[in-house]
Image (cartoon, rainbow over all chains, first blue to last red):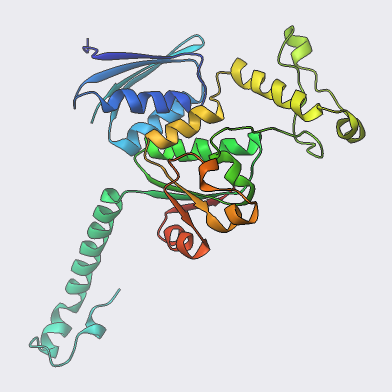
Length: 76
Length: 211
């Protein structure tokens, strides 16, 4: 099990707010630390994938639980 | 790409050598060129230049969403506000939306049961034009819909742009034309410029959008 360093609740927020919140949260973290993000925006699945590719962070996992999504992002 | 043709004949390498190793040199150059180009592309900071020309609530979204997102992706972003786009930089944001003459805009109620919210009210232009305060009402409903859907407000997105280091620049000519003063605008406006200053910024950008 991966250790979580920080958690961000972006549920109920729509594009581009989840990305903006994650960007803000991840800035204050150290390299290699893991951020867990909860979201309800279906567009966030592709957006977080693209965000991580562009910014050099690693999208460790992307899961769907009903109408909720959970992402693990390792700061690059 | 051939490098043979570009080599000065006075070079120390003899013609013989080129004839013998020409293809190998070409292949070496192509490979190296591709590698260097790839390295350059990977290390380069992407950039976005937006020209924001609209001053209504609906049209305020695209420039601020794209600019704030691009800054979150680590891009270098500049937004040039001109004509009605200047409204988006005012200290007090009073943006409204008009459904008049805009058949693409759904007219739906932001409250009530689901079936009721789903109705698209087909209001004739004549009614929209003659009912006082129709735009105010439409704006109020749009704001409620935005809130219900967890979409950011324009003020929030503008703040995110500022935090993300987006360069907000405004058109000095329009400021004069509309009789505004610099005090009407947020202090984060980085510069008051003209077309001749913005075009070189746009020229160097990977993505340039007119909104």
